[in-house]
Amino acid sequence: MSETDAPDADDEPRTSERLVELAKRRGYFFQSSGAYGGVGGFYTFGPQGAALKGNVEDAWRERFAVREGHMEIDAPTIMPEPVFEASGHLDTFDDMLVECPECGESHRADHVVEDNTEYEDAEGLPIPEVEEVIAEYELVCPSCGAGLAGQDVEDFNLMFATNIGPGDAQPGYLRPETAQGIFVEFPRLKEYARNTLPFGVTQIGRAYRNEISPRRSIIRVRELTQAELELFVDPEGDGPDLTDVEDVPVTLYPAAEQNAADGRAYETTVGEAIAAGTIADPWIGYFLGVAAEWYESIGVDMDRLRFRQHLAGERSHYASDCWDAESEIDGNWIELTGFAHRGDYDLSKHDAHSDERFTIFTQYDEPKTVERAVVDPDMSYLGPEFGGDAGRVVEELEALAARDRSAFDGDGVTVEVDGERREIPVEKTGFAVEEQTEAGEHIVPHVIEPSFGVDRLVYTVLHHAYREDEVDGEPRTYLELDPEIAPTFVGVFPLQSDDALEEEAREIAATLRAEGLSVTYDDSGNIGRRYRRQDEVGTPFCVTVDYESLDDEAVTVRERDTTAQKRLPIADLPETLAALRSGEVSFDELAE
Ligand code: ATP
Image (cartoon, rainbow, N blue to C red; front, side):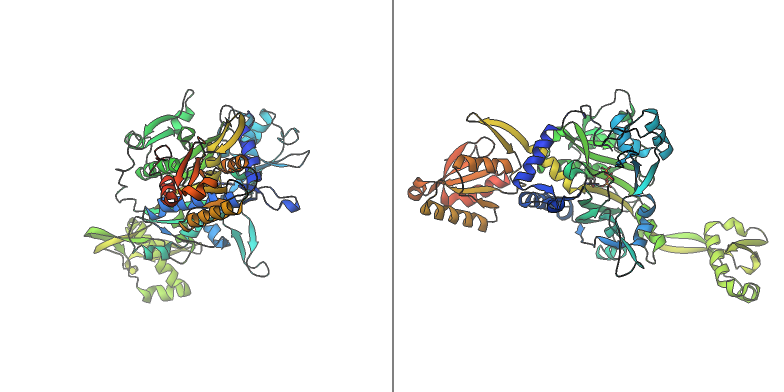
């Protein structure tokens, strides 16, 4: 999905520019290794940013792991090559690259197409078609303006390669998603889940993608943080309980609307969308509902969030239904989260490539009597006839009987061993159809995956909270962050530089910290400037100690958004502020 496909995508990204400047100045995020010129796609979260990101991750963990009753793991970020051979990443985790013949800059060919033509889903086009579109529209290099027609478009694998240990005998890769760390441990994780479906495993951690053109600060980086949930379900099992989510309002942009000339996103509820078949899978519907409520709880503006269904060409071939949560940023829609029904793709791949079983034994309600085709070959015939290959012939006969019992209808049966055809008289195979009673079967669970990008969540929360207004005739910038997510919850100040006021203020700061609140103490500059500083980082409340406080044991508490002030007793502060943080009480409701 292009980041520049919304109607006014050509407008200057005003808020983003101001936000990125604020983020650097106030310690939210900035390009890493600046002392050495920096390198594209790597960002450091400063003190405010790291705290905000931590709060978002904690809120995610609380909602998607703890409250859902799922297990969280923490796997390594480097994994050996066979993992990515099995997962398909080595072959297919590619983006389309086109190089400028003049300046040598590399670009994502699908983004060049999407940004400059009416194509919305160039990622799904085959390479020759992308080359044709570039030529037909005479598309140019976004950096220097030179024509790109006639340039080869190539697949570029996004994984960072490394060597494990000295030498290059054991190639490894930095994981491009946290999910593989969960899939490869499935044989062990299923034991912890007592071999019972459904069960979910979550992971929050770093992933690495060698993006062709990282851009828009932390929206497209080369080292990112993901929060992923892999829910393993029995495809024949019960779906989710939708009671808590069916009335959740969601804005949907289904594939049919995207394909229609006058199509548009519209509001509905999770329950209605499932009943109408717009959301095909109830599990996907369940997670869209949970996610919608969660986004709102961390401060995403829900008028600027939609769920967009993948178009047919965009969807991975194994995925039956996929939706992206997208947030609006300066007129562009940015993918925040992917919700995918991945079928049995991941576990089947690892089952086939590794020595372990990626299946679960599911018990039938009642034992079943089934017919099984079996062989019991006459080894006194097979041994002399096929020598060292006899064992392989037996394996092939067993597989053939399970697969196609009609192959044993005639007098002879043929199997292939190492490309050579071997004829065996059916009477020597011991072929029979037997009745067996079975208690259950081994199945490959299906996977439902909500995959969240934490960096883009942080960016969205900041962007949607960005405000400019005027206070006392002066322009002011503030971040209207949710009190539970804001990196700093309260600023504590002495009104003036004075030992007694400073001592009291420090004491209050220490008491509030001991209560678990995130507090900043500031005694530098005039009080107005200190308020502005806290407004800019989004601190919801400030507490000021003045000379009267030393007599009346009360302080001035100021609210960020309205700048309203109230006089409150020092003794009540921990309780009052905790209630303000949890939303139990609003500042308006507080009695002085
Ligand atoms: P895109 O199409 O934007 O490249 P994707 O479809 O490849 O993203 P997924 O593989 O579904 O992304 O990854 C899940 C989530 O991880 C995305 O929804 C996004 O929030 C985040 N993400 C992916 N790539 C990046 C990146 N380079 N920088 C920041 N976040 C990313």
